Image (tube, rainbow, N blue to C red; front, side):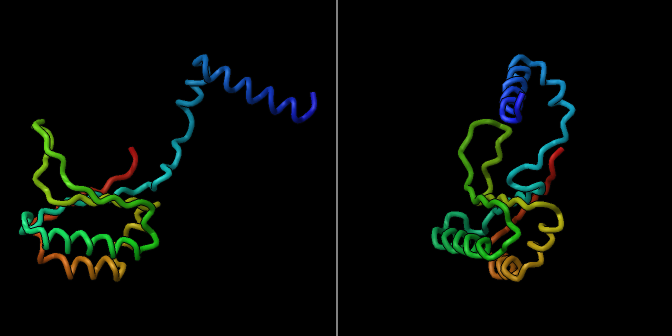
Length: 139
């Protein structure tokens, strides 16, 4: 069997055993993959002091957007606003959420001390009344 045919046979064989479920025990023992968006997730919730003031919200949002673009260690970034919900487990009391991911904790530390992040905190902290941060890594 030549090299090309052997490779094709192997691909078909692996696809077959995986499809039939025989490959599941092999996959269960596989080393976890690195998440494509980074191994370290930094989630921040902001409660603005004047959440109903459109100008304050706009300024804060622009401040956030501008500093995030300046920090090279950020893998992904997401700025959100709460969704109204009747579910008792959903906290919709915050004004903005921010989720950024990094390769690892070392990159997150670079982010924390980066001049753009430090400037954002200094220039924006008077606009919020509360901040809550959740940092996590894959389980």
